[in-house]
Image 1: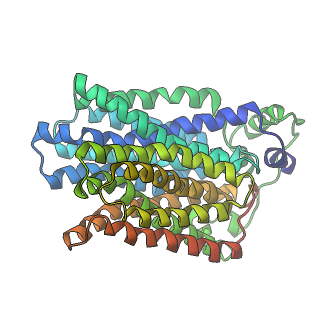
Image 2: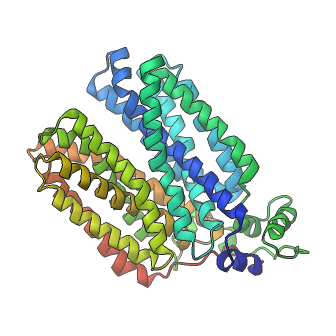
Image 3: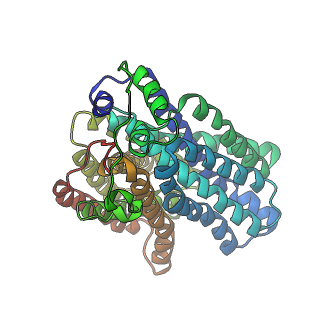
Length: 442
């Protein structure tokens, strides 16, 4: 057992491991498309149904609320039934939500279906993040999870381009229909190329676990096992996964990762949600503001990859803290640009690069904190808490604007959020020693 985990941790990356990570990238692209699909169709939906601002806001928030609930309450089931079965179930849930959204007849129906879609996406995101981490070697784990995180930016970028084309030809319903078809199509690569987590098979030992472990052992060029290790016994082993997040040795790291996810998502979603509009209010044209927003996503593709490459050579925690501090500096500098379009474009690209890298770094760090039997629960709850920050952030920014804050002043305030996250990470993380991938911990 420990030999197989050691081979994954210390050995060279095999082809099937990279393929599994590539499937996780595809799954995360669905998340990026789903978050963006309502934003891109909002104007058309509002015109079609004569919606006011409050109704449109409800539609924009419904998906994020569903994703938070999916991360909190559906993702933990991956620690009971397996990462792969949960991903397949969530693909059916989110795909059905997207297809039914194309048939919705009222704003309330669409909001409920956006919530249903979000439930599936929340479960997929946490489970795919965990499985990408579990199949990467120790050296390349940061890069693997960061590459998986680039899927969000890729889905947001290419999904937006597809949405624009579909809107001009067949209207807003076609965008949801296409998203549903792509979600169901993702079931095929999951069935073909995404193996169940080795850590889950060893720690939970479901039906035919020995046979499945030995298939993975063959791919890792290791001899077959004659028997699986004995499962742990006692109250600790049988207690609920959520309760074990707050064991004496785990409580500090759980609370830390929750606070970090909340702060970073709070700052990140302010940047992504408000930048196009705030650029316009600062003197740029509407088209220039949208261009600045697109560059945030494009920068994110490179930011997650850069963080992953750096973490292969340096401490992931310190690289992540560096990205947080650089993001804060860039946000402060951004406030001094005025209405310079070229400067705004350059800074938009850099801010997108480093802020997306912050999110990717947390996705890479969170699985290292937990043992296999509670890993999906721990990561799911961390992401769910982060989604709470994502939901709250745009509203807080709007209230600040209503209170008389100048648009670019907000960036200085939100820069402090990234500074606080970096300080917490650097001061508290060394005390709680992130774990290695240990399948038998229970």
